[in-house]
Image (cartoon, rainbow, N blue to C red; front, side):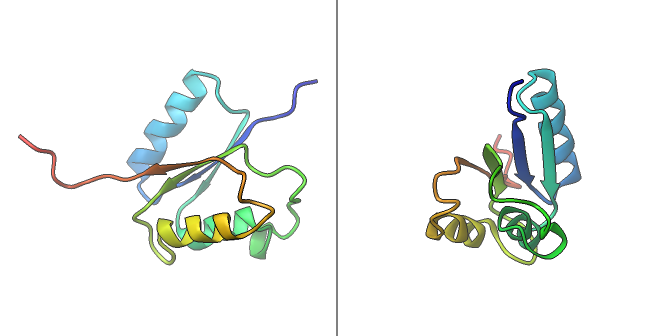
Length: 104
């Protein structure tokens, strides 16, 4: 049986989350997508603490989609924490960001 592919999507924009989840599902890129609405929730999920203390480091997310602009803890701090810990440093992180400037 193939290992489930879990993705952590850390983004506080409901519209961006909906679009991302829809496309991941459409392309069958993940069995499970966990959405963290702020940087603190993302860190708790990644490091198996707080409400996620029953998670195990044995099966970390296969990839993390990380918004840079999030409440509580911003994406840069989340990325620093991931890269500074031996247990999580090898997890691929894709940085997401948006701009209010749509151009012309």
